[in-house]
Length: 212
Image (cartoon, rainbow, N blue to C red; front, side, top):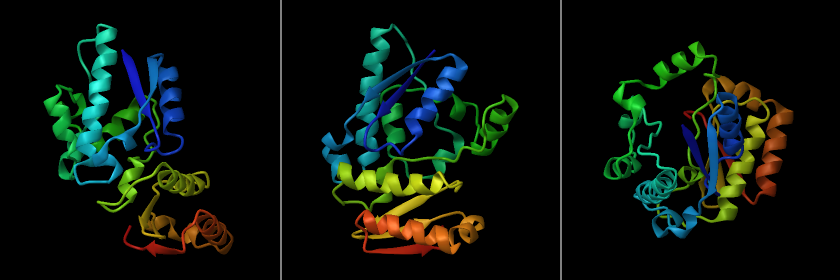
C-alpha cells in the first residue's frame, strides 16, 4: 500500500504533517507531491465546479504515480455522509475509476470514528476541508488569501479549539465554532489576541456566527 498526499496552498496548516505521522505509524509508504490548484481557472476563480476540476487534476496525477509503480487501483476516503453534501468532486472520482471502500461498505463518519477508536487511532481529529471553501463562489483566490485564512484557523487550533472555520466576505471575516466552544473563545484575553491577529492579517472586521 502507498499513501499519496498532494500539498499546495489549499491545504490547511498541519494536514500534511498529520498524514506523514499516520503513514509512518502504520508503516505505509508515503509520497508527498506538490500540486498547484491556482493554475486551474475553475479553482482560481472559485467557480461552483471548482472541486470537480481540482479532483480531476489530482486523480490524473495520482494515476500517473500509480502506473509508474504498477499499482492497479486507487482508493479515496469518501464515506456515506459525503453523499448528503454538494460535492462535485465525487463525479470526477467516478469518471476516473477511483474506488471508495468506506462508501461501498456503507460507513458514515460516526462508524468510521468508532472503528478508528477500536483500532487505536485518534477518532477526535476534526474534519478538515480545502481552504477554498472559506470563500464565496466566483471570488478570485490567491495564495496569500488562502494563507491568511489558514494562519488564523491554525492559531485557534493550537489553543485547543476543535472545529474552526474562518469565512471570508470581502475584507471582513466571519468565525464559526461549535456552540460548546464559544465560552472559551469569548474569554477576554483570547478574544483580544485573535482579533489582533485577524486585524494584522488585513481584515477590517470580525463577526461571530453563533449558528456555526
